Length: 321
Image (cartoon, rainbow, N blue to C red; front, top):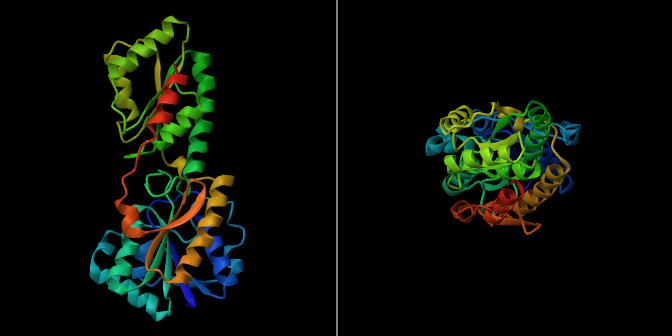
């Protein structure tokens, strides 16, 4: 293998740039030529391909987002577009591809391998931490710390005004951002998709806290359960008379400089990804398991069912009382 490509796909995540840097510089160190594909699979279909050197990835390790841009490409599910993408890679003699993204991006990479014979390796870049084969995904730690910073600030003003605040964080199917940020921020209530939530019981706990002299509460809500304004109305319908404010953090969780942990993961994932390509294994994804960098067959990785950390959730619930 002499030439490889790298692209970012799907939602952006802090640490993607650090991973691009690691892939590029380590591959060049190993004697490879590196090509960046802009705008994910859409750019691959349109042959938006450019050669990368060491200077192309200078001064990006601390930047959020992705210098290669990203997009979602539903048309890439069609074999015809996959073959066009493969032909574009072959025109540059690119034999292997690093895909930085989530499960949808990995499925696209697997299709490239299965249908077109392109050797691919995936780096898990998604703030949701929703891939079962790896303990942590790239960008998750940064997103949690962004949410935690917001919770800290909201705690100050909610305490001053004796209010309840519902903080809505990202996480449609996976409640890890809510869980980790809620635990770190001392939230009184954490609401996630994986656990049944009794609104009447939540309202009761807020009322009990008020009788005990605790006049402010933080509720961290994963967006996959419901919206903050809906939860506010449900609590009001349960007879809560306290002033309730809502804050939707939204896309600020995706941006910002990656934390040390995400930069470390980016470096380790990038190096392992290049080594896997050089081994020519086919379709693999890299990750971290029990503090060790691993690579797993993509099909097997996507089949794994994610297990929610109930023990950690129970711990957060007890400490938030």
